[in-house]
Length: 40
Image (cartoon, rainbow, N blue to C red; front, side, top):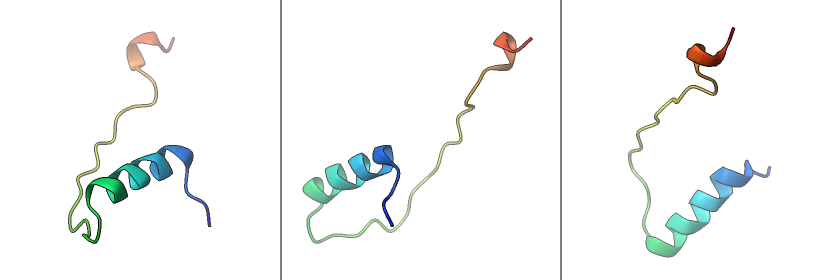
C-alpha cells in the first residue's frame, strides 16, 4: 500500500542517512491544519 507522498519523501531521506539501521522511537507533533484566529 503506498504511503502519503510526504511520508514517502521522509522515509527515503532517512533510508539514505541511516542505511541498515532502524528508527526505534519517534515523536509526532500534531500541528493544527487551520488556525482558529482566521476561522470566522
